[in-house]
Length: 168
Image 1 (tube, rainbow, N blue to C red):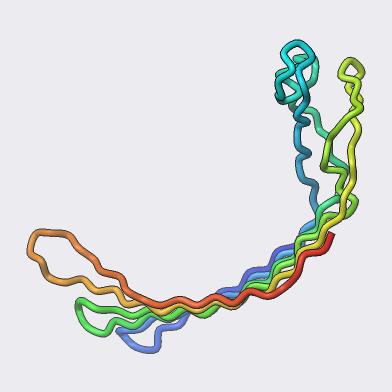
Image 2: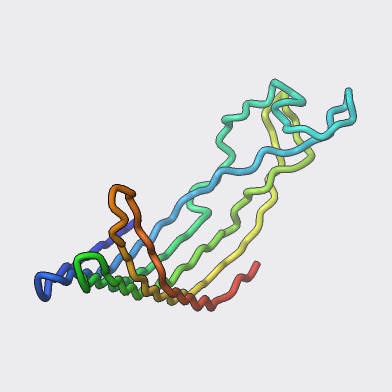
């Protein structure tokens, strides 16, 4: 598992402030498995396995190590300019590249299972999602003078473009 973060701030003049950030994360983990929903033999109703059979330990660790891989790269540019005592403008540009990858996860629990011996059937799956996201936001923050009434008006525009795919 690794994570890198860098932030550069700058103040071009007394009415402006900006920052540039970069973040990179790589992680191999496990995810919790779902608890099976089963038919209660007494009532015929669906319920969680631990409700139907209290002998099932709900907090059992059903995970295999390193069944989940995540990579994220994020970069942002943020700039704030005070136009007057009551008006400021903020511009934000960002980019995220994300990969989530389930590798023979065995995250689905199902029948047959033997609660007495704590044996469950784990069904594996693989799935990978790759996304590239670009976003931009421009907003104005206006604080009109309304006397004693606290107020703030924010108006702006945002744009997001997402591309990528999911396979499984």
